[in-house]
Image (cartoon, rainbow, N blue to C red; front, side):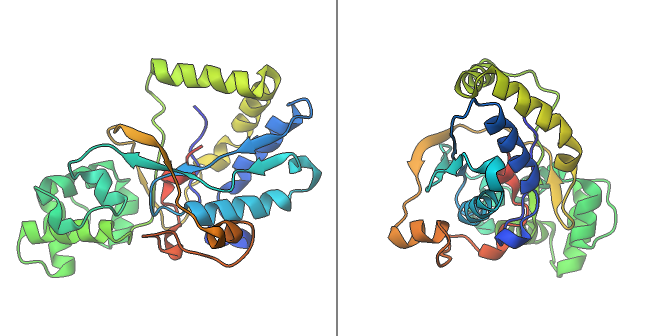
Length: 269
């Protein structure tokens, strides 16, 4: 698997985490026999696809001859979960209100279990805890909640509003599935063997940088996989397309431009 990059891309001149990606693209084009490389972006709603695309295009254009053969598709594709029940991912992706989540205590515990403990404690400014009940007690004292359930809803509300910058690590100890192996074979066929080997070498070279965690972000372990719909494209108008090309910024529906600081799903490559 390629490394997961925690990306903050509020502005092209302040993008964090894109250097390893550009290094991989440079390695791919250098070994592609003079062929152009077209790159597409996919991501969930409200995670910063437009800001990431603006930053990536600006940095690619500033990369000189080494990246001159890289072109970005103008519109990203939208990942749409097919599950109809509300769960942890809906909270983290800001697709559900905290009050609508059934069994909020269990949902809060599921999020806490995935979080890097030290980063979570630092972010929430609470004392260390050992159990789910202790977490709710610590958080209740912090926010003034009167019951564990109210504390759980308050925690879910905190996450659902996007107030905790986070990114998700890619699981490294899982055996690739048949679909993943088929996708890898398709990638080799698309790039060619030489370019693929160059990308692998470049990925090893940027592994340490890829593992660096942006200050203030909470790393999450990979959660349970959900079935997703890959057929939906972003619904953009002419103004949106112009914005990606360097014009006026236009916010994605449901997206806060200040929120692309490590909400990492779209930062995974």
